[in-house]
Length: 634
Image (spheres, rainbow, N blue to C red):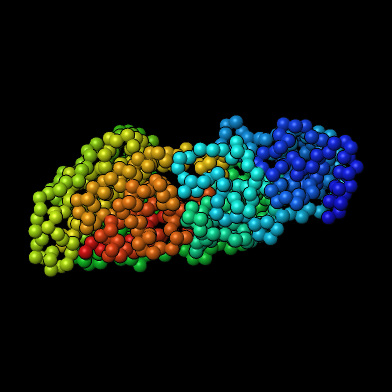
């Protein structure tokens, strides 16, 4: 390139005036070795401009760890008017590492602030971007070598070290943060980008390009899986696309949207690496196909096969506009399972904070809407929480509930219904002899009696501090018309509010409040263990919104020591195990577990992507997808 020849000539001519190269400013780690120093005669070609400055690129370094791009920060209209894209310039100023004081978990951005002595040496120079997937390709597994625990970036404890405090030499061939840092400030092209989720509230969205990726699911997204190193795959090969530098409108993307090539600047902001496009890309095509209704169907009344659904229906009140859509999802896409675990049922007054706690009107409204679609009339079951104690939208008093088909399941009689503060316990009745009917049907039986519970339905240790401002698990014991028993546990654990960016300074990232979820899962696991200890052949179905990834294996250990993940039993491919899409990941926050007795008989599971496969964000009525499955009780 002619401008590089000119740049070399200029650099030689001004070397006596103590010039500094961009490569020397960037260095081979996250922070500049010249941080805080005044530099002069820094030369480079302007690659892009925005309202907060511009970027320049200098001679490339033979060291791939060293970026030759640099952000020049200025809000001066005079300075911005002086330079244009394609100008070869020289300038001076102070090297700074910028990070907002209000966001201490962000990584620092290397820049020159308030530039001085700007001289335009030539104009209209051609600029060649780095083509990702051709010139450089991102790694596909880990974000940083500092995530050294057994669960990688999901390891606990969190926040034991800081990227910027260690400031180790970059290893861009191995780690995602290092790779994108080695391109900081450079102009890059993303060929054949594919969107891997909906845009956020700022119209920013994630993509992967035409390069090697891992965890790719059938829709084109990147699922969290366990990598070949035995650790959760953090999908560092994805990148966020920010606002276009020319102000053009961002495209309306969805999971799997194909776009025109994106050329832009690699910039760290708001807790992530971005590519800021010089102009917005255009959607070429949407992902093919849409969510289909399950083929899993309820069987005859006296069959010991039970179908089930699980769905976080997102702040459902009697007047919620999305209630009819949810009813259609349950009736049409889930085929009205025998029992449905639902989360985020609000009280009868919705978010109005008036002391109402019962959700019977909410549930009745949903049940009636389902019945109008396919003439299946559910019964429902809830325990109203104490006002204002279970978290969620203020005034809503969200809780879990069951919808069930009374011709297939009924509560085992004998125990009173628990209240919000009653603690359900496992009881062991006196030994009994199996009936001839049980023997003839070859169902589960033994001289050991079936365990019972002290409240039916009941809540697991509701006054335990682990459940502060969080939903308490809803337990019930059911029986079929033929007498087969089933215990269900419906959970909605503490949300991830307060977590840090997974691409931030803290390593491993802050997974808030993971300590609360550890305690909650321990209580759930202990309760399930007490059922199994009473009868190893007991049927247990645990499902709900855990607000945690199954790949966070240390957190789930109290449950996985006792129960088995239904996806695993059903043989659902690893990359298709998702019910939620957030940042760059297709992920599962909703999980299903079964006891060994059920697992031995076989399990079917499908995740129905009615929300995350929607063609637009407006078509998504919950941020969770429902799941549906089938188990056998004998």
